[in-house]
Image 1 (cartoon, one colour):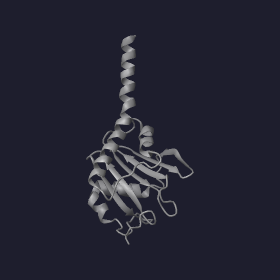
Image 2 (cartoon, helix red, strand yellow):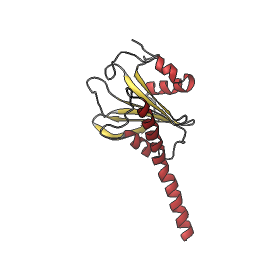
Image 3 (cartoon, rainbow, N blue to C red):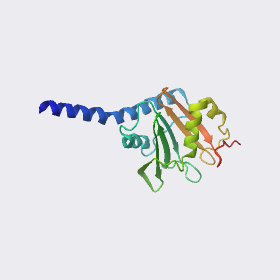
Image 4 (cartoon, helix red, strand yellow):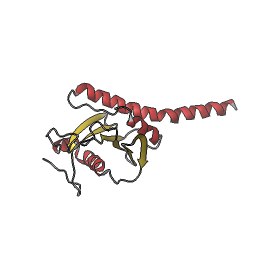
Length: 178
């Protein structure tokens, strides 16, 4: 009887701590990036930490090798909004997360890709062409929060993080530059 209790506790600890481990990996990657980049910092938390909630909801549904694409929904007049969107993908699955301005702590996990076109665009191009391609299509004007959105890519596969500023795509999925 005690043997089964010990095994059960071990299994619960093993699977229960995995989510925290994935979120801790995100925090480590983000902190390493922020230490070496003074001007383009990654901010995954404002008045709350949605990335933590995201990984709590994913649980054990994702592998340790994943990519997180995260953005705050900052657009005029809602600068410093608590609204966000995120895509978490491993080599088998993709999970989509968002919230609403009115109830920012109510995070919705979805398998539907509607409204996540740019996150899918970033993932596809990051995997096929790399970060240099996405850096090349950034809009250089300081319009963040007005016409374009900054996207954070935390690559837990290669232990790298990136900020892509002012990315915009049109209805056909083509990058828009100005």
